[in-house]
Length: 352
Ligand SMILES: NC(=O)c1ccc[n+]([C@@H]2O[C@H](COP(=O)([O-])OP(=O)(O)OC[C@H]3O[C@@H](n4cnc5c(N)ncnc54)[C@H](O)[C@@H]3O)[C@@H](O)[C@H]2O)c1
Ligand SMILES: O=C(O)C(=O)C[C@@H](O)[C@H](O)[C@H](O)COP(=O)(O)O
Ligand SMILES: [Zn+2]
Image (cartoon, rainbow, N blue to C red; front, side, top):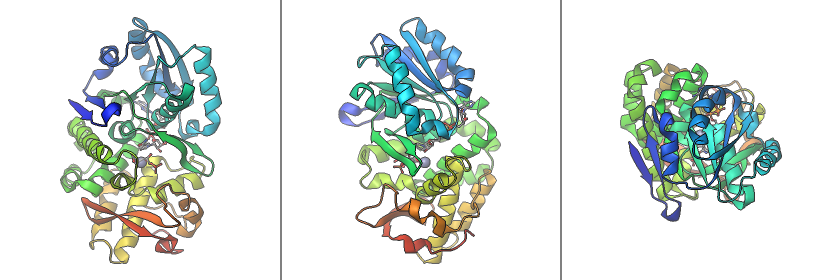
């Protein structure tokens, strides 16, 4: 299956196919004819799939690697100098290529490196986590975290291609299967009641597994459509941030070391919908629908933090405009909208 992201000179293909990693070289050759490739990955993913990829690439290109410790702390601004130094050491030039092999952490970091190293070198995404396959590898949001907040330094920089092989999910730890389901459920909530119904009917990842390629394709296709309409996040694209105002604040509060991104998004989606429903802004029963589906896919809906404690971090949300928060609310499952508001929306209440 191939989807095309139509963004003028920044257009690219997303290929989704079981076993695709084994053909990565062929796919790369279609869009890249330079001399060198630098693969950026983390130690876990590289342990599983680095050998397979490097063996292929080495027969055509001069290859080097940058392997970072796995986990969100590698997506830090402090990691950048070491990565740039390694790329310089390997002689990577502007006509060479970076390949991101990993989850969203590696994709976002390697993408940011590609956008900034020598003022920009081409890059390809090979996402290996569910979250990265359904969301982060597409759309060109690349970034690193600051201690003050998530993704606060970044750019919009599109990859030349995205290669999605659902087979690699076989080695993904259970926690990150759940994590990725957080973003899958998000797509159902904001844009696709029928996807939500499919997820609800399956009820667990095990029962959904046989439909995984289909589900990944549906999520990516929704994102493709949104990004084509609003590449630079000035309107429609903000809907993809449903649950994220709270999620990013939760992640920052615990220094990116407690809730994973998908877990935090799950909490954020439920809590904002609960509050919005209390205020009569969302159809009654929607928060309960979300709570049930998140629970069935192993995701939390609360983390015992007083919402007031998250306000400072929420002030740094990138959607904020002229001192106003732009919250993403649901009218009902499958229908979302941007709601201009302020911090009083959250009150000082404990999470229910
Ligand atoms: N750019 C975007 O549009 C966008 C969208 C959503 C999320 N994100 C970002 O993505 C990040 C989270 O991504 P993530 O959940 O993939 O985290 P991650 O990259 O840390 O991956 C999760 C864990 O799974 C391991 N892993 C990944 N693939 C594996 C595989 N196939 N087999 C075995 N282990 C594997 C990793 O080593 C890691 O330990 C966050 O920083 C978030 O902000 C970005
Ligand atoms: O691609 C987008 O746009 C998204 O908002 C997708 C989100 O799932 C993702 O977590 C993104 O990185 C958040 O973006 P940010 O602009 O809030 O940092
Ligand atoms: Zn997200």
